[in-house]
Amino acid sequence: MITISYIVVGIIAGFVASKITSGKGKGCLMDLILGIIGGVVGGWVLNLLDITWGGPFSNIGTSILGAIIVLWIWNKL
Image 1 (tube, rainbow, N blue to C red):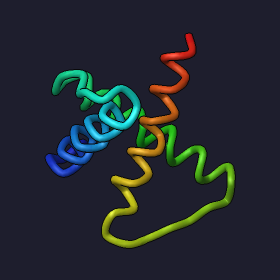
Image 2 (image 1 turned 90 degrees about the vertical axis):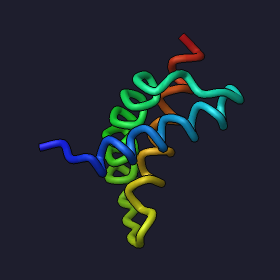
Image 3 (image 1 turned 90 degrees about the horizontal axis):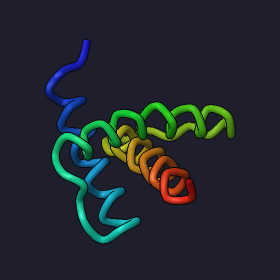
Image 4 (image 1 turned 180 degrees about the vertical axis):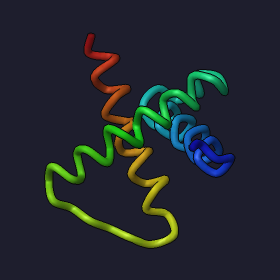
């Protein structure tokens, strides 16, 4: 079940990743989708590399990392 906190984290992560890669956001809906996909990709990559981290910002950090990876692949295609 998606809660409001997941949506907020998704929007923030997608926006930050968009700002890092292109210097501007992609719109609220695209930032949300990017953040959610980024969370999945980031979690998969960190699990694959056997990296665990905790703390109050671990979820958003993982989502930002994954969203940057997704944007990098998207821009290469």
